[in-house]
Image 1 (cartoon, rainbow over the protein chains, first blue to last red):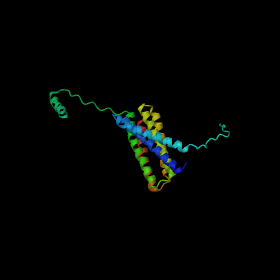
Image 2 (cartoon, rainbow over the protein chains, first blue to last red):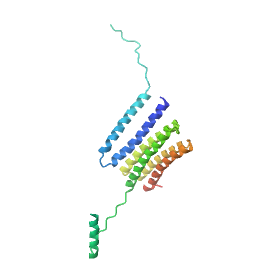
Image 3 (cartoon, helix red, strand yellow):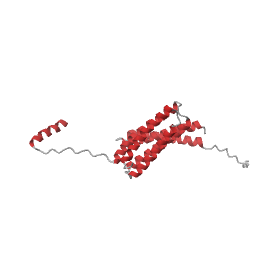
Length: 74
Length: 146
């Protein structure tokens, strides 16, 4: 994977980690949690999407499986 | 309402009535003090990370150093959540101090990473980290540590 892309993903994840930490604190402090729950849900959804992007980017690309002895049709 | 209360005090005193003194506010517990300090810590952590991100975008922090510093910020956010959890659970002060020390070590690692940067950039990174270190260092005696 491109080092520049890795750096960008590390940065995004670290930023998300700090944002989630601060947002969760804010929701715990707020008397009315409903006002801050939505940003947390958004952040978590964003984190899920970024993790999926990392998994997709780092997964080895397997060559297509070719059956050496395909069944003869007809 | 306040004027009425004051008036009643003035009226009561010459008559020799006993006026109850207001109950003094109870001092915050060590856990309340810890929670308040961690509020400031969370805000300052986000600011410190923002400073590093801006410096990187400005081209004065090389990519490998940026990756190390950002990873450490992510780690510190995790420690922050753990400290919050321990405070919320009124855990043993020694457990809280241990986690605070781990966070201080990570902050020290960021300061060390910044040592290789140019003087101005290093000073900016270190200043943001020093504020966080100071906050946490003040927390240790609150929980009975040294």
